Length: 295
Picture (cartoon, rainbow, N blue to C red):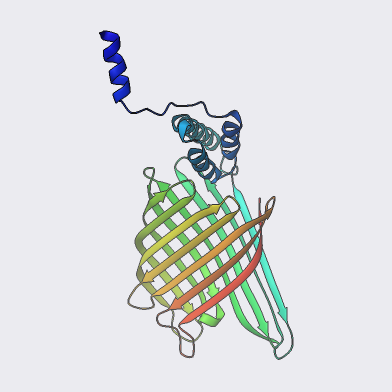
């Protein structure tokens, strides 16, 4: 009677999927993907689709690899001295054109970044220069520091110090100091999105106008999307709002890895000045194609 009851229950219960071991070659692929930033999530997702019977084992392996990478990162940055652990990136591009107009120009930038348990640091220098028919038609130089003091996994105090010169925007120099609060709205291995807000102080020395000092509200947004391990999309926007001369800067870029530490980048920058000097345009745009070397 007992045997008949068990047989009846088994017959009435739908067949349940039985977990199967993950093939060794798939496990090795997932392990190898952990060595490339942004690749682990993509490879793991493919493994889940092709081996649904091994979901639990795949998730466990991904969790273990992620935890191991975080432990190694913390151990590494904890032992760093101030001069250690900096990563750099240099990019350069240029052009020459002849015919109806003779143009020559170039663009270059250098960026250093470092992350510790409590801080993220970034130092950036950039310059654009162009001559058209023998006369300078673009000349802009920029240098700045951005720091993030981490309050939690997503929240931080954002600080920024910048100095720039833009002859054709009408100012010899503009210095900006700001402090505010930042929050990471999206924090995934392949996608990060930060927003920032806070007060700022700007000092501008114009060519044809009186110098001005203005308190501003600073709003910012930074997006980084790893589309593929070798293809990254970035968008950085900063807006200053004040009663004197509000401005906006935005940079959109797509970077693709060529080989090793060498990449190619296409970018589009837009700069808007609400109250430019007389005979100056409100909006400047720059489109670049550059080579990027990471070190």
